[in-house]
Length: 189
Image 1 (cartoon, rainbow, N blue to C red):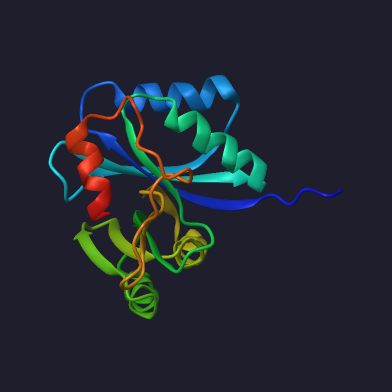
Image 2: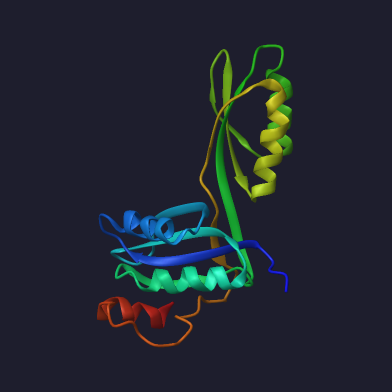
């Protein structure tokens, strides 16, 4: 039997307090799971943050990651959005060399990718680009011939499309280690 490895997008709702990211990344490290990208930010709910993980592996690996995340007391909910209709984006800042001779050509490429120039200096430009991973990688590859000096990428963030809502934990039960006021949010989400 052949196992298929592919990219899975997991979103976790976690308590917004010190040490949570360390505990979660420590769990990934101890279990030997690799995180391709990780993005964290405050959610629309007070005292909760949302983490978006991109994990490479087969379905069994992702199921194991999800089970391990649920064992952490700071994790309120985990959703695998891999087979759901989602909107996923990444943002990058790219600093590229731009002399007076090459600046207009770089600006034309930036326009084609619907990116923005957010900083200009005599020797370089900083470009902000938002889109899927392929778009950002393509822009970065095109700019390499001019001399990419620095790249900073956020990693994937994702959200279900339209009226779709994230499912509760797969077993449908409330977790004993989750405070009641967080459990009440699960009905909303």
